[in-house]
Image (cartoon, rainbow, N blue to C red; front, top):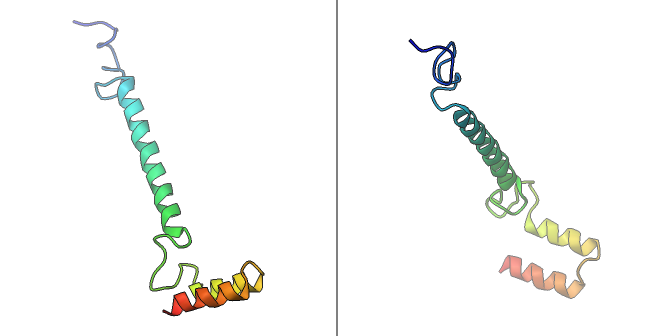
Length: 91
């Protein structure tokens, strides 16, 4: 008969399915990995111009032409650059 000790007593193998603390650490690593994967996937799918771009429109509902017009209106690009980029979008 075994008394209390490493593998005997009330809790068996430390109560973690025979793997001791290694099983607990492994389970925690799996949980952290799943959470990280979900966060990564959400960020990837919601990034502007990333996988969220469908049919020439961005996930936010803004077309490339609207973005170009806004950049021109803010003075980020010149009139010549605007016209050239507009031709590229239409061509």
